[in-house]
Length: 542
Image (tube, rainbow, N blue to C red; front, top):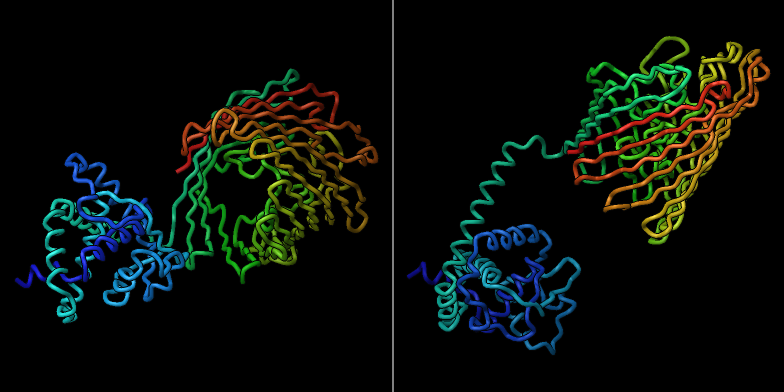
């Protein structure tokens, strides 16, 4: 007899039970309910509804949404329940007598929606669990015989659904326990990216190596969060993407060759300070553009999905820069709302921070320091950038300069001050058009000469062309050059580079990117024939 009572001690009237069950399920499932009292006759009794696939789907939704339920202690906490509502007294009694009413995080109850038999069974199961709690607490004398009879009838009518529900819950609990026992980490997510690259150079004077190549790169990111808002990134990388000998541009943004040795490519930690400050500390592989809110170019944000050419990265982040290393920076958003944000970023990177010898180390060797003001909105993004850098071997390794020009006189310790601006207009969700310009003033130390570097580019992106996530990208401009080479007996030609690529997403995990790069006056030398570089990149993400 005690077993039967433990299943039937929740509500004071049949209508109160119906109201609570319809709503408790609607809360868990976020599914429609009726605005009239629900009786067992109004709930579907079609036997074909007991379909295993549909059942599992409904119960899966139930388990996924229960985290949104918030227990209430007073009916007044439900903003959309008024004293004039037909079920107000029933809800009030359920809250005060049994504590079985829950609401959405926004304080609403949403009681005007419909439910299925399985949803009703899920609510009934929750009610029966609450009955067991009341029995254990010795509160079995607060309900009437009518309540017990109602619950007994409902238990018998929904016996099949309750059995299915309990079996599914038991299976989910077992799976959860197994995952928790065997998971890689409770704090770390693994993300992988693999690139396959087939590429070739086409030129008439054989200035470049021109054999077709098949190269690859593998990256594994271990992203760890301790608070839910911070991120410790540990990136392992292996690649064999050599540049074509004589390559004037570093044709592949993912390029360089470490013979497929596994290396620690990035080791960074970011965390918020308050609501508007984001701090980034890098112990390895830190670039100065990592210390900003972005490079404001839809073509150069990622070497996995953007343009093939390194020229897609605006030159203010590249020319006059000592390299990658260790350092820190922060971004402060002093204006941030739904329409736009305005922030300032700054940071410092030492090129060889681990070397304790004279002229090296974190603060006494090659370095770069950056400051950037960034404006972001739905219509336009703008960045104004300043970079100060020191390099003990100078900054003369510009676009092909060391390939043809005798510029040993400027390949000595120098300081570079780079000023750049980048803009990107977003016309709806499809078209993005922008570009930028970079200017570097190089000051030679000692008796070394001074000179200037220039570069500018334009970008066009057409998003979702031929399918969601696809992108047609066009890049064109003048790579880095200097007007001062005449001082060193060199010619003063200006190169021009254009690239067109099409990113096609086969699915969420695989994409293909054919690209064609065209270079006029390679190495800033009009005596060299125009050159094409064709590439097919395949990216796998997991």
